[in-house]
Amino acid sequence: MTRWIISAALLALAALAAQAQEKPVVVGAALPKSGILADLAAELGKALLLWQEETNAAGGLLGRRVELELLDDGSEAAAAGKLYERLVHERKAELLIGPFGSAASLGAAGVAERNRRVLVNATGAARVVHKAGTRYVFQVPAPLGEYGAGALRVAQAQGLRRIVILARNDPLAREMAGRAQDEAAVLGLSAGQIELYAPGTTDFSPQIERARAAQAQAWIAFGLAQDAAEMVKSFRKFEYAPRLFVAQGAAEPGFLTLVGQDAEYAMGISPYERRAATRGNAAFALAFARKWSAEPGRLAAEGYAAARVLEEAVRRAGSFEQEKLREALAALETETPLGPYKVDKGGVQIAARPALVQILKGRREIVWPEAIATAKWQLPYPGWNERKLLR
Image (cartoon, rainbow, N blue to C red):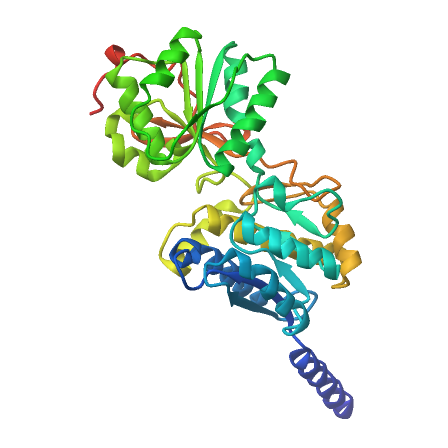
């Protein structure tokens, strides 16, 4: 009996030793660890490190320890292609997570397709990343073309029919506005031509004049916090108040700082909200804050969500074999702190939508989608002589 116990113990120890010596699974990504984008992209890397720590503490992937291989692209999107070739051929990465931004993601996607290696697109929201025929690239964040979805749904729910769409004159904002214009027509809304404005615009009186002439009921704009602030300043100066005011940049923290109480009732577009009741979001936000002493932002949520989607695909495939992973990701429907994951045949995200937030009593409240709303929207956007000072 004693010999049997000793033999069993030795066998168990041998099994544990073999497991400990098993080669780790290398998960590769390229990020701006130096250069002008390094500070902005830092939380993306931090989220991946958090995921690695949590996954290894839970036993790894299919019993293998996760080893992150994060290469530095020096804030040069053009370097992504070569770096992902290195990850595949030199670093022997079995799993790939996309880089920072759509331009770099496009280069990484090309490598993934040529080498028939699965790539989870963590941050590339532009449509150019997923070309026709893409088979190995799977998008986690909401596409840019969906950024106007919430504003249009609210306009429709409020019975508004005449809208004006504005866009900062850059490729990303134009893509958002173009899709919003097309979707508005489908919903039976009259949008007219997109109003493009130059970066740095401070006077929106020409756009206000045209909106008044068109009797526009809703003003939907795609751009930065500074743009949204200048719109509000022009609104107040010219005593203009559309029934619905949505500006993408109004969801950014800096918007409140720029206009103070005049920010009230403005709506913004946000791809991630820390308070959103999406699956695992509260635990993620808490864990991120504990580890890094900072609240997670959009990039952190995108990186963490991409890693969790990849983890779930590995679990369902029961393998690191690329074709099995590709099939698992193509069929997968799940939810992450960023929101739902589901893709079409080209790997394009079709389930996630950016949230619509409204500034109410100096606080950003989620008002759409209703499933994760923290408050009911307050409309119409009040005239300037109807407002009261907050106490």
